[in-house]
Structure formats: C-alpha cells, structure tokens
Image (tube, rainbow, N blue to C red; front, side, top):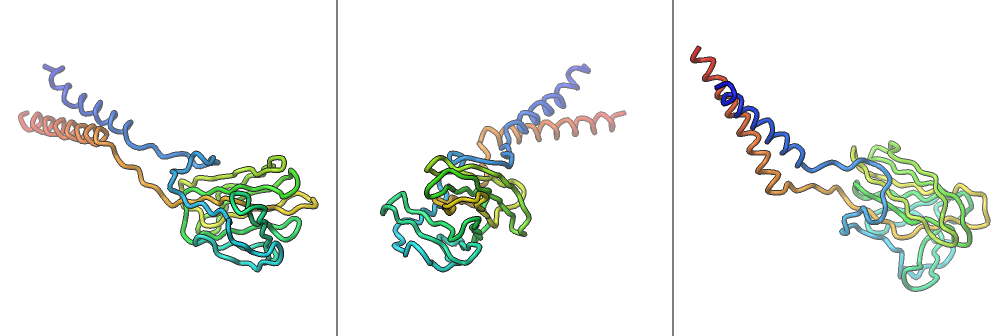
Length: 215
C-alpha cells in the first residue's frame, strides 16, 4: 500500500524534472563567431558608398547605428565595388565608437589594418555604458579578424574598436553584424512534459490532503 501511495508523487517529481531538463537553456555570455548568429542579423558592409578616401566627416549613420571616431573623421577604402570596401580611422591609435540604435543581444565586427598585421582591442558596453566584454586581438596578416560577443544579462548598446599598435597603418572595420534579442520557443514535447509534471504534483498534493482529512 505504501508503494502505491508513493507512486503518484514520485511520478510527478520525475516528470517535472524531465520537463525542466527540456526547457530552453540560456547560452552563456562570451565571445562568439560568425556562425553563432541566427542568420537573420543585420550586416553593415559599407559597400557602394562611393565616398572620398580621406576626409569623411563623422559621426555618420549606417543601418540605424552611429559611427564616430576619435577625431570625428573617417577614411573610406573602396578597393573594389564589392566585398572589399571598408572604413577606417584617420589617425594612428585611433578608435571607432559604434552606438547602436537599439540594444542588441549579439554583435560582432571584422577588424584589421590596411597594410599589415597588428594588434587592436574591442570592447562591448551595455545600454548604460557599463563594460560587458573586452578583448585584445591581433588581425590576420593582410586580412581581418572577426570579434563577436553575446550578452545574456542586459543588451549591447555600444562597441569600441581601438588601434593598440604604433604603426604606419590605420585600423579598419568591415561587416558589422548585430541582432536584437531572440526568444526561445518551447517545443510541444517540452510543454507536454512540463504539464504532466505539474499534474503529478497536483495529484500528489490532493492525495496528501485526503489522507490527512481521513485521520
């Protein structure tokens, strides 16, 4: 008899535990790659702007985000009309500030130097301008390195890219990716397990009350 009385609460506990296991897991905050975006993110490529190479005034807005530099001037590098176009700072040890028009859950950018391999830093800030993540990185030789970040607590409101090397080149950025918060959808099986777990707990509680009332 005691085994039968124990069965209902035990089933409820097991089902509830299974439901919790099946609930969507929250990804840990940290550095991410291009493949960690959902695929529906916005990508600012800076292609086809047809701006002068030197002397472009900043701040300037692209895709709802505001770009500014340490001296309010940026360079445009139209090497080709296509994927090679990018923008750069105007001075050595310069930096880019990217103010996002809306908070983003994920953001990332390709960073490099026009003529050499060198070091840079990328810092991500929340909507209240508190630092969320900071990384020192080195660009690929004659190429670009992607740095991305996903925020769990809060949203990304600003990104700063800084040239940390004393060199003859200037830092350049390309393909800024960003996307807003994404919500996880419960699968039908997860919802069913969760519901069964709650029913099991309810039945166990009702049985316990009846037992107490009959004493």
